[in-house]
Image: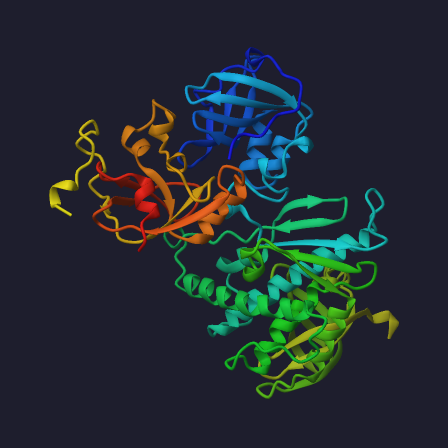
Length: 394
Length: 126
């Protein structure tokens, strides 16, 4: 296959400069595929190998700067984002680095396969844990309801926290995590696009064993990997509007396991102003391998809620908790607190989802009494908060 | 195949391939522009004349991936020059292999024996 015919104004090669030697090599695979070089005007430019034929290498070249390169290397922007600059060139270069011909081009005019797709990052390991794109009539560029952003962030935080908690409980640990594991609960936003509200979250960085003397660490990583597999199945099941039956997560999945996973799935399903969400990322392995995304709708949420109501966890007994107390020892990372100064008991551990964090923080900071209604798990001895009200309402 | 066929070109340094490269004995994935591939699809950095200032031995080897997922990641990033993925089973009579730093986690460098071409290695039927 030969090089494509370029239909663009030619540009004097000497005004770009010498491509080799490279300034910084960013992607090398049988030669330099993405790199920076010093330009004729004493700046730097980014070169991307778009095509090749015998001894001609065709690069897309864009002026760049250190901050763009840094953002590219850390996965904040994609390869295409870095190349899509107000002025961009195409250059046919011989392997000795001499630019034979060059053209002034617009990225949008290039053949579809001459550049990577918009979401492709510099390295595979930079791929986000989860990308969520929220859609709805109210979600407009420049006029985004703040509640929508809060809803997306809270949903993702709660879903991921639920999965980590489940992974911990799966290898015999539950309750409050040790300080060494708190990194798991700190999700960092990798990319944020306002146009249609698209957010990407990085996987928490697992410290290497040598730097981090914690024997539980590798086992937890393995447990989380298994949890991801079931979560992937759960999301695909929720997205399948033709399948009304309960999900099949395999024989070894207990009702309790199913409940954990479906709760995490539910956290990502849309409601209110968000009509659909589009999910992708390494956490959804089967979808990620195909470089696809999956769509959840209000119907997905109804379906998950309906199945959750039918699951009976025979290993645990639940009762209604309805008491007034003062919030002490709030753990924001783990989403737990101790409720104290309760009338008929000394203390109760409670867990809460991200949607309740504002009233809980307010009550904690102001040391006011609050009314907590929730579900008490006899096995875990913890209350899952469903409603929090100022005591004055009672 | 006679044992003395297992030689690397005379103009390579005596330490090339490196001592810790092992007999090639695994499936590997390469990326090609053409289907069926041509000799143009298997050029090393040395063949292309890239980076004469870099490690000469490394330039003589061909980058390959041990997993199809990693090969797909290369194709995703450079869809036009890496349109197709090709699989072959390397055997000790083909050359030496070493895990080397690269943009994908299963990146390896493969050094072939002098009397063979990459094209015939990749096109042979396993």
